[in-house]
Image (cartoon, rainbow, N blue to C red; front, side, top):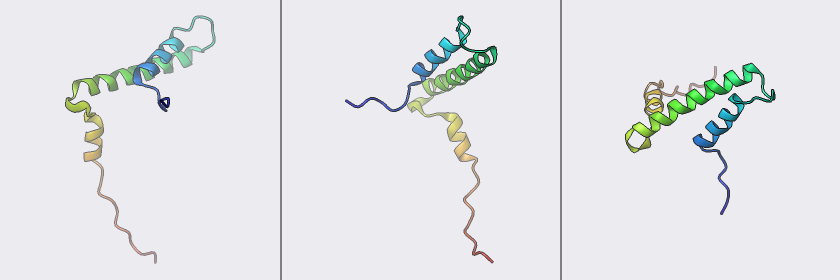
Length: 77
């Protein structure tokens, strides 16, 4: 069986937690802070997908509904 190409949300959160909890000095405080922010985003995304029916992401659906219609192709002058 072929390995999946992308990491799961849980795998990403595990890696970010390892960055945030680094005690040997491999990561700077700024990198740890960025890891905490990204983990928070992933947690919110995971919570939205778990709570919505059918696994749909309401945030993405709202964004798609608010997109303007495509521009019509006008001939160049």
